[in-house]
Length: 552
Image 1 (cartoon, rainbow, N blue to C red):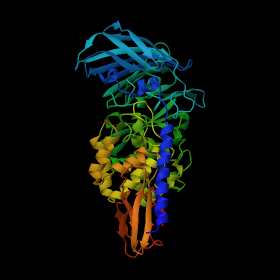
Image 2: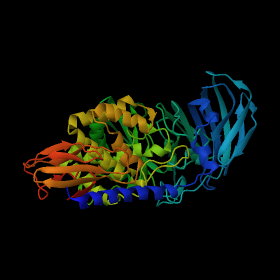
Image 3: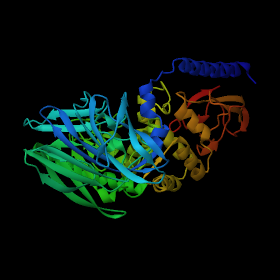
Image 4: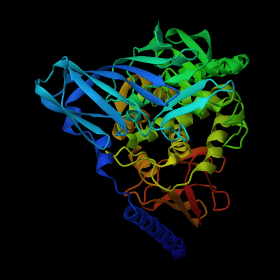
């Protein structure tokens, strides 16, 4: 055995551990406001939200809002005090319960309400919050949150909300935590005459008011997360068609600025193709009752459930670009495909804590590759995933810290997609892989999940213990290195170098005839007898496995 390669491996492992230690020292500090927003305290877990009726008036000229939100809840425990959330730049004008005003106090963006008597466990009850003010104005929606106040080319109002990450309480009062979704919701929005509002779900009523405003009532019949609730105000042209899907006829609605009405064919083509591909891979569209909408916005896009925000200028690619540089990303509209993928991963399956936002973005990033796979084949799909590696920075883990409303690294997109492509490659059975993806969406249909839910499901249904793989790629910022040392022709010492304790992961190599062979190294050297192979012709599938390789 050559001692130099062994020494190299030890030094490499030590370097990885030192880098992790440095990252720990640089750990971010979080404030009381972060904890109030991100932690599930007894004042939040004591009640389970069943239904909201958000009734809001938008004063476009003054960039202000006012209205009410009805909280219908079931008491999980007996309580006489609870917390809801509303950013402190907005005024809580009154908290109404059984016709009377309740006392409340505020700390940062949290509001604490005292009830006159104990709400007993199991009771279904409600209260209404009256509020008003000037919401935060987004400067770079959807990457920052708030109201996006814009005008179209005719000078008419063109307004939208986007608040993922920052939180829905940036513009309306709610229990602002992803773990608690209402079963249904009514969204009533009054806007100036001459424009309309489009929100989630189905339009059930339009009400002409006496003061130059029209109120639009949108009913959501499926569970919805707070950050998905959206307003879209504009001078829209409306087009409707149907899609014949796995659960029957699905209504497709398109709302585009009237000036862009002639471009509607682009959206129709991309929407139909996207639904066809994703129902194949993931199962039925999760919100048939609420329909599927694309709504044109001034910002690039957002996965607002059943009312996807679209701003990709009616062109293919990501604003006309392909991040993979393979050409495959230019054959479809990135925003239609990516944001529609979130209807399954993000809206149907929702992470309980923002720390696990990687669940939303990793699977949805990979959905882009599966769209390519469906129409152009597996090789094209794998080329796209491989090309996306150029965007990975490995600067911090893709899972964030729990209980402080903080997501992980932006690598959750491309690195997350790479992770799922690797798992598919390990399984090496595409029918089984499709069953797993569809099974995730049926098992966790309209549910909230966490890291362990996804890992347990994947372990059980893949037949592979992926625990260390997920720990490596989700919870650290490093990738493992496969160390291969030739002892003699056909005899190799192989191990993984990783900062993850007892790391192990299957990986494909190629035999002398070029056929794929799955091995499962650990962090301890093991002898592998591979007839006909030498250092010169030893090959690892580094195209589909995102790993380092030390071949000596």
